[in-house]
Length: 190
Image: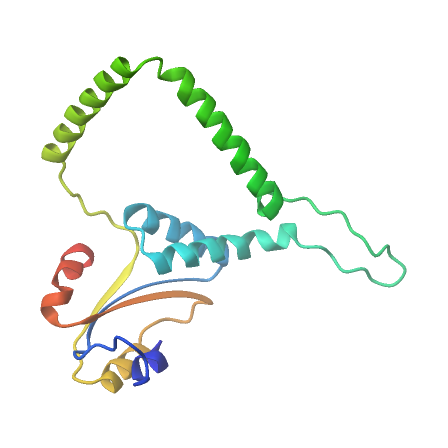
């Protein structure tokens, strides 16, 4: 990340290098996936969602991978998949079957236009009630947050290199910009 920040050839490079850095670390991919799941439920950030998926795949890899034969063993080993939808063709078939089932159930539930319109009006009233009564409540996700003020890209990169601990798995997300641009993010995470 530090090298990417110092790279002057990147497009959309900011002019100001203040940053709000969010990070999570863990000793195992399974624990990292669990911690990211809680964070992603609260505030899904694209980088954290992708890392959560990757950590989950690393955690299940040991139970799903093929074992290489040793010596005179057979060259094909049995494998138990924890989720058969990990096979692309089965995933697509599952999605098609699911969509067909949802479509059939949806058509069966909506019997005529008048009932659908009445339901829509009620849903709109409920939505308006939720929107006027909704209050944001921050939760403790275990996400590490650091506010960094730097004058240059090199200064920010140097400060980023000093962040962390000695855990095996890491996920970083840095919001870079002026103090006013970062203020909404600071209010949310700090």
